[in-house]
Amino acid sequence: MEQLINVLNGWIWSPALIYLCLGAGLFYSIITRFMQVRHFKEMIRLLFARNDSPEGISSFQALAVALSGRVGMGNIAGVAAAIGFGGPGAVFWMWVTAFLGASTAYIESTLAQIYKEKDRGQYRGGPAYYFEKFFGGGAGKAFGILFAIASLISCGFFLPGVQANGVVNAVAQITGAGAPVATFAGEVGMNKLIATLFIVVILGLIIFGGIKRIARVAEFVVPFMALGYILMAVLIVLFNIGQLPGIIGMIVGDAFTAQAGFGAAIGWGVKRGVYSNEAGQGTGPHHAAAAEVQHPAQQGIVQAFSVYVDTLFVCSATAFMILMTGMYNIQGTLEAGQFLVQNVAADTTISGPAFTQMAVSSVFGSFGNVFVAIAVFFFSFTTIMAYYYIAETNVAYLTRSFKTTGALFVIKLVLIFAVTYGAINSSGYIWDMGDVGVGLMAWLNILGILAIFFMAKPAVKALVDYEAQQKAGVTTYTFDPKKLGIKDAHFWEDRINGK
Image (cartoon, rainbow, N blue to C red):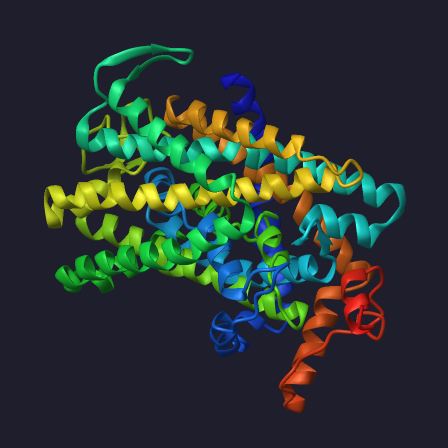
């Protein structure tokens, strides 16, 4: 299994996907005239518009759920891995990925709103829905089913294990692994098993409550955990403020030096950037579709802001903490056990939260270890909730004609098993599984939304329409898809006709 995952990872995360992610972001930034800059003020305004309904959730709740998926292990362990394998320059490419990816997030999330539907008392949408409705016929249905299956494999099995693995490793960094216990995955420390059991029990209580309960939990937890984490980073930066210009110079300079591994910096920066902020991956649109908004472009604009929060704020916080305190190694293309830079013990796990815990502990002592472990728990736990909702949405898509709840129950059990399996396996293997999941969805989604753009440009038409209403000073926005030449947006057609 591990060999198969490694082979798939090499195929999926070829340089072609790296440059596809960057290229799509640049393309959409130009096409939308850098809406991620022009509409920054509107992003903030829309965040606090209370517009939820019995069928949908508010824009802020949708943002919180989306952030719960974006702000996770990628922000702590992912940044550490990017630095450890790609050098400080990888952080620069994470920034580039986030800035350009915000426009991609707008496109995919607006498409999700345009083609969403009401299903069993709540809004549903995402790539499977917009592929089927836009392309139509057998081809559209087949593409939708393909993405839905890929999402189930990725979000139902591959990705949750990464988050759970990070939590138990953070606990082990504080308490030790504990006495070995024989399990189906080999010997596992007792402390890791206890942490795994705790995650599984709390997760079960929440995911059996549906999207409304997930949204309520995310709405409270995500802002709290993100602000607390950023505050900790700000304090560390202030304690080391004299280093800040040098650190920024090192990040930018290292991004373009052959000595640091130019290809490695780009590759790891983009890979971990996409893993973290999910722009183009096709996960964010599921949450965006669940929001109650007056116009599809509004949720696209809000989701673009979530990419900023994830990478430019939270990921940057992690990077500055690690680099300012010097608590990192950089693994080069040298023999095993040798490093381009070695500041900490050689056996320190790169694909985990250890660098971040060591960085905070170097300033705040043992409290730092505990604080990062708590942050890892909340970041990872809410991400697992978001993955469940994505899996649930795609199960609902695949079973629309059956009207059964049995499949939803099964996916809950599968996700709980995935969490358990990921928590007690080695971190490197589990991260590779996560990368396969991210890459698989990114290939399908980015190619699909590019095809949609060149055939009809619905998300760009929605943006132009929204900007025209903004300019006219309307107080209540409307969206008439037929007037804009957008077909099969049945939800919005019914709304404009008063149904």
